[in-house]
Image 1 (tube, one colour):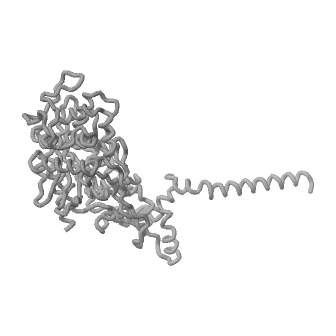
Image 2 (cartoon, rainbow, N blue to C red):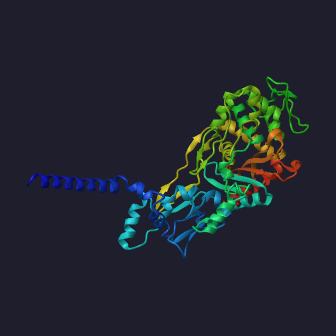
Length: 491
């Protein structure tokens, strides 16, 4: 072979080699990123070529799919009682993607999860079309309905979170106002317009905000439960009925400012039981200052503060600050200053107390299953921390039960059921100029000693008469209805 032909042959060989390298690079190295590239329309077409699996509550789907008559996408998502369930399901939209369970468990719902490979292979061999799997939740339908309807009846804005103290299962997760994910599940101009109307910049009520997980509020006097736990755990006081060293007026350390109580209350040197019953700021503010920032922070962290929670949907971290002086610690210990909490966090506080000091990790997905209902993954209850000893938890239970029996939480009483609770009316706005938030946290104990539910409710009503806003008046009746719904479902 002469020299020019040899050069051409070598050059052609190099071109073929480059082509093989490029082809293998695309097929094996870049395949996954190309497959999942949002600009790859084939991926979206394939995703909506078959009905999605369902999100299940109480054995029944709260989602569905409907065939689309126009466009490349064959099916779109539908929702039953969409506004009620939106804080749980999130949305799945052909135009805007997905959120919450619809996004986190998209692989199961579309049938593309690697764990469904064997099931999909069998379906392919038998000629059966690929089907999505299901997400089985821990939610209690009756409790969710009671929570959502209670918030809706009060009006304004608000949220409810309810847990099973023994397992950490989320039983209710409601937010109001809400939205219907079905309204923009498609890919049309009407879907885009419907979503735009829900965005915060176009709708000040911000109905797409999941207030149960993603909004932090000053918890007000409900945080006094954490402060009481810190007092017991650190040995500052060993009995709910031991008189405290709480002067009246109480001048906050390093200031000339008295910490006020709401009304003429029996708070001077009051035992913690009486102080929780009447919600004495002076008693719990001084407890926080006496314990100091470090001990209060340590106790708050045991309850879950200063850490995000994953249910698996992410919940914002609740806040108890570090590096505060004594007066700031006093204010934070009554749920003001920088202290902020999600409704889920305050439900965790009530849950830990009800469960004799053991805090279980909250979760809302019980099981993932294939289209033939075979289990793919099962969630096991997991202990998160021990904020209190069993003995101190039972002391705190007795204090919270006094609040409901003859204190500020009487609206939560349930016949033949022991209910423990704590009200809160949290200040907010510059110089406390805005209407306060109404809080209530509680748990129910049955005659056999079991505690099937712990609840946190927050209501923000900027249009209400300021004097009519209280945790006992607005939030406690909602908590009561949620607890009753769970108790009745156990019968």
